Image (cartoon, rainbow, N blue to C red; front, top):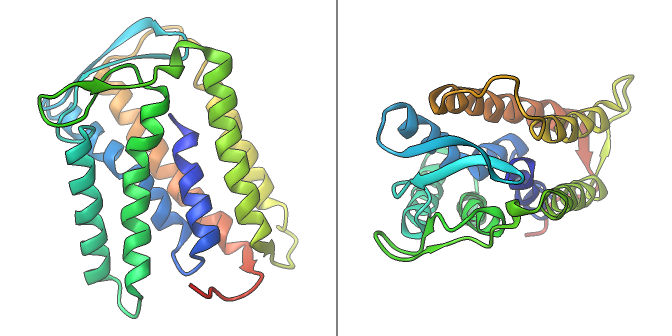
Amino acid sequence: MFIGHYAPAFAIKAARPDVPLWHLFVAVQLVDFAWAGLVLAGIEKARITPRFLEASMLDLYHMPYTHALPSTILWAIGAALLYGLLVKNKTKGVAIAIGVAVLSHWVTDLLVHSKDLELWWGGPKLGFGLWASLPISQLLELGLFLGAVWLYFKSSQPKPSPKRWIGVAIVAFFVVIQLYSLVPPPKLPTIQIFAIQALFAFSLFSVLAWVLERGRELNQPSRL
């Protein structure tokens, strides 16, 4: 998934408005931040294979330290504990929300990946493979994303400002980037270049989440 990973961030934000949206954006992609770094270090392996799946050219054949289920659980627990230690004056529920956001990455990947997600280290690999169908995978991804955005917009409102439409513009930008990512590049990148591009995209989206949230205000305080 790409922008589909951000659906849990928006949904959690609607339920836990005391967690900054950009923190949730980093959390839902924390595993892929680590994956890109480990690919660049030569520790985890992947390759670009044209038409590997109809909606993806990524053959993710070795990523036990980030995308094996036990690894993702450990990343989630570690992120929750670290967030609870570093962020002062926050309730335990906020740290749990961050952990859930990290863990959501594996669940959303499970829907679209081929069988490349280890159930345990060295164990069987899972993946429902919806990337094998371009229409189905994109309807799912965009549906999850836009549905979660609707929940977030329903729980907040734009601040009175000449820039009140910036949130809609940012969401539209996310959708355009998702659709653009499906266009075959004129020249296939190396997996290292792809990893660098991914790090840039994840970072940019987190910054845009910060901008989006600054233009909105809660309808009512959190009761959770």
